[in-house]
Amino acid sequence: MKDSYIHQGLRSKLITTLRSKGIKDERILSAFMHIPRHLFLDSAFAKWAYTDVAFPIDSDQTISQPYTVAVQTSLLKIKGVEKVLEIGTGSGFQACVLSYLGAKVYTIERQEKLFHKTVRLLDKLGFGRIRTLLGDGYKGAPRFAPFDRILITCGAPFVPQDLLDQLKIGGIMVVPLGEGDVQRMIRITKVSPTKFEQEDFGAFKFVPFLEGVNRSKKI
Ligand code: SAH
Image 1 (cartoon, rainbow, N blue to C red):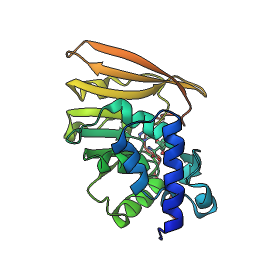
Image 2: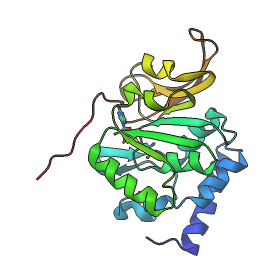
Image 3: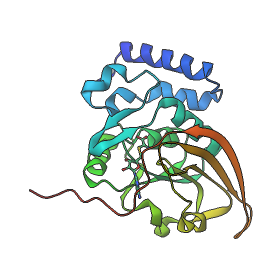
Image 4: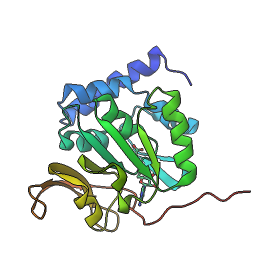
């Protein structure tokens, strides 16, 4: 578990790349400067951690591309006090970005093995304040609802009604929507209990949003 000047140098190059791709929010760029992405990857991929690429993580899942994390975070319009529900904890990197911005983060993962690995990592990195939940994101987290923001970080075939119900009026949901290989990045604003506005921010690729919890087998 090390971070070094070399890693910091690589991070500042990644930030230059993100700027060149249109990410302008200094707070988000600062989150990328401070969160050591190489510690979220398998050591085999660590040396490429600061390239703008998605990588495989445990349980056949992926850590999203930095640009995708930056876009999803910008679309959420976080000011720093919001209660945010993330679906798809994965490596925990996106949750750390939201927490760094000051949001109160709840995050759900369905892969039990990956979940436990990530909980340990978040504690070690000083992000133990992130509330981690093992469960099925299709159901959300009704115990902690309503949320100011909901972020789905896996490709959703449809928008679950339970998640729309758990969003505050005036709240924002960001969801990669669509079956198959490619999704559209959709931002939904809840205008009233039954009225939603929708904006489209283009094509992105995500692993699928699957139902149920995948319990790890005991030996
Ligand atoms: N936000 C993550 C991206 C991980 S990829 C990161 O920063 O690394 C998407 C994750 O969504 C995977 O870990 C996958 O297991 C999880 N996922 C898919 N369907 C889910 C569901 N129904 N509930 C919770 N998590 C789910």
